[in-house]
Image 1 (tube, rainbow, N blue to C red):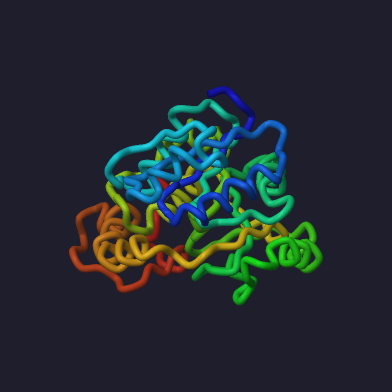
Image 2 (image 1 turned 60 degrees about the vertical axis):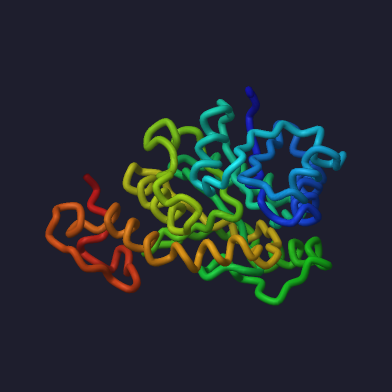
Length: 268
């Protein structure tokens, strides 16, 4: 697929929420963006919707029968397209007016490699609109533009740009490759990717005025995070901690401190 922007929707949520995600992307009307669905071990209800729902059935579907997780979906999207900007969106995310355009525009600044929006549901700074509902996405998006204007922030010291909606410059993928699929369906892969990009010279930025609403995670996502959080945290520290990389430590921290720690993500 050859386009300036490709948007891949990690399709695993309830069909009605996936449809809302797709419609919000289509309403954006970004003239150079292609939308692709990335079914990831869909259940029977989602399979039926993917085959029959007009809003979904007409879109390319690059899916797998068994769930492989977000990093595998991101890699499939990046490798099957040569788009200059790859946008990964979790189903159940409803982009506000102008969101996609602002993310793509933010990446035109030299040195920036990744960009993500504000939202109503996130553990990091991006969760600037807690309590916002699915009924007022456009209003909240307008509020975000009024409140933040042209403000763009980085997320040091943890480099924690979230994976619910993230735009990535092709240059990042060309230099550092894909996401680490060893994280499977668990979390932390996006932080791993963020810090790898940062150490390669690409900044990840929170585009504060862009807004995307997030529905609560599916039961499958909640169960996956609970069951795999401990192993994902260990894998992350194996990949990022200088002491683990040099074989000088076997135990793990309960929470990574990022750049505050002298052993965090050695540049080499």
